Length: 544
Image (cartoon, rainbow, N blue to C red):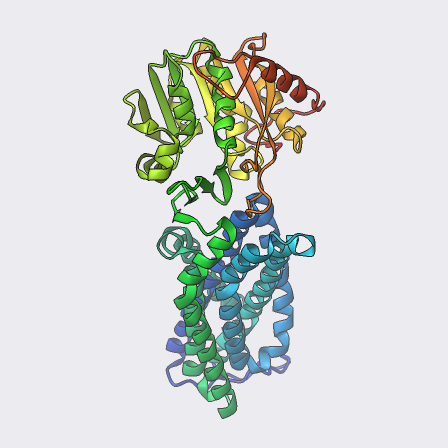
């Protein structure tokens, strides 16, 4: 290790690293730089995770969005590191400027993404891809700034005490990686549940600019000219003012953006540990709309038609014991309870907040006919796949999978061969399983992939589709914007263990929107969309 201020060995290349004039001892100064590295690394990872989460939530397809954000950001970090070489001889001033820019861009990124999504996503044309373009732009900008941090911090550490490059890199990266760990854990467990994405990003930007400014204006102030000190101070105060103003207006901004996305009748908007739940209307004669993660799941006349089509054909046979996987809104439960002979209904729902709203909210509980108040209904809060792994059977005459669409990344495991194999295990020998497999007309390959997966799991299937009457509700992988909602058909697969497909029938013990002739026509229409050559989807090889 080369001692600080020691002359360079004979033959060594000349160094342009000027020892810093510190107000503290070198050991203390070095510690403070590593603390700043820790804080900045935590903030940088929060920006990264916030972009991934927001992109997945706003745009859908979390795998694609995470891949785009991470690959663009890592690429930009390399470019930023190269660009920062020009700032090494003004490392203190350069680092202060980089941190101010990073705090402003990273802190405001969530709000900017939400604004573009809320107010331009429904315009069509070139604006339809506005959120995606802005996502790439923010990933690029944040990556460039994060990449510029490392060379500048390395130069600052070397100005405090010269040492071999390997030791300096080890110290720097150790602080960086530990900070990344803290930021990675703070985002899902502290920032997201307690502050939300908007305020959490703004707070992270505030911490970022304060840490960078304190290091430069406190520890390295003697290396700055008077003009540089005042410029950095005023810039930092402006950034703090912008972030503080945005935080003060975050509540009003979120309400305005939510109204732009969902309409003006929003009554309930809550971010649960599973999803965002938004209820609009449902009182004073207004129709009820239920949005889950931005997708309209209940709305218009088609809400009843969809659930009748999902439940009715499956309950045309034995149905004393029914298992519903998902269905926390209670609408599938309502349809099951309309059939005579049902003795027990078990509901496995991942989100307890949705079930609580289905019980207590006046609009949603009226829509589901207060189904959860029926003594035959028993609710378990659990992941459907995990619950099926622990279940022992055969125990059920009917299994209804009222789950998010297979095109949504988080739902892929619930449309896998392994999942259907577990569902088959809890079915009675003459039992039936019904699956919503997405719109047939617009995504036939996904629909027939679900069918192939069911067959691989040992089921024989009968496909059918049902057309919507009005605007419908969105079950696909794209968020609803209020102007472009759902596909106008829903594809279903009625399955039974064994080689013979179950017959499609309409139960006759209550009035329904489905008829025997209509169901037969719907089955023929679904079969005409058949796609050949599709393969089953598994947990390790999803094909949706």
